[in-house]
Image 1 (spheres, rainbow, N blue to C red):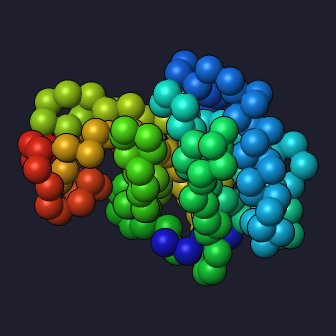
Image 2 (image 1 turned 180 degrees about the vertical axis):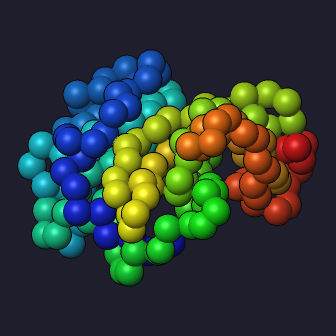
Image 3 (image 1 turned 30 degrees about the horizontal axis):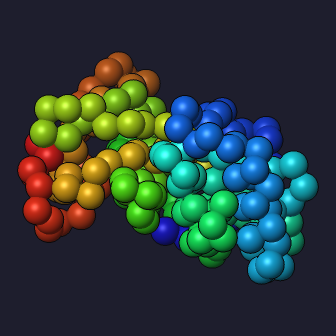
Length: 191
């Protein structure tokens, strides 16, 4: 997925940190230092946000200082261990009919996260093998004649396969299945 999201995260990042990361301010300060070592992905002032915390690991998002592109990173910033990247390139056209599209994923401490986005609908819940997964809405922006909403899902590395999504469309609530968690693994197939 290649996107350029030229929005200031402070304006659209609705989610705050969840409980779990004990030293939030220290983690943000250290993440700024780690990210600042790569001027190509340096956060614009005031845009670095902690979106999710798990133990000493965190998931961050920010606007890149050079062009405002959406960037993301995860890892253990207090130990100087982070991986990150920015969404560059051409914007994908909006999906028709409405649908959820898979983004990308990476480890987050003892869990994994998966970015996804929805065109023409909003995701209300994600379940795997009958159990809910943590879903965090990041924000939305116009794309073509519609709206694209960004999310991430937190999962155990043992959870793989298709998930069930509860979505809201202009026509009402619906459910759909999507292959969001990979195609192989040791755990239950999500259905």
